[in-house]
Length: 166
Image 1: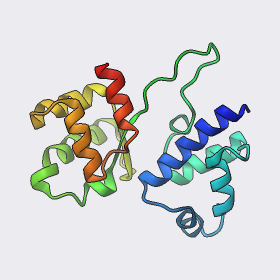
Image 2 (image 1 turned 90 degrees about the vertical axis):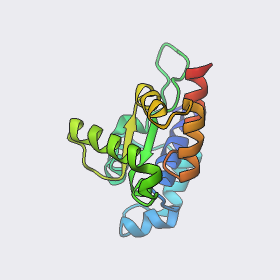
Image 3 (image 1 turned 30 degrees about the vertical axis):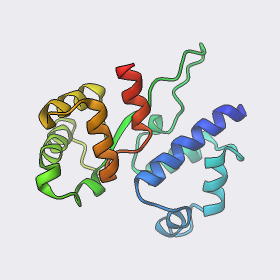
């Protein structure tokens, strides 16, 4: 595994962990010692190679599909696609309904359509963000900043929106 790929993979691992509000030690505690903080940290820094089996187990622990953890590069060397837009549903539940009501209803509809009720995170498409921007009467970039300030969307989402608007 190239060191650049390992660093990209590690960044994805760190993003998922932080979106779930977990520290490295929190991962160790929640997993009852199955995932050692020092090991997960070394995966995240790209200092240690992770096997496919361990990556699948880690994805299962975080409750996300394995492909969410993989860097977006392709064997042909194509440019990395913009980061996924991943809503933190646990944080969304704590945002007052007068602010987040439309987003909560939209997310619930997507969950229902997908049959996806893990309750922690929800990936949305650029089209979903544009639809939400219309609902909130804001541009996608302004809405993205608002969702980041609520803690519902990771700061990496700025790159996805900039890529889309650029």
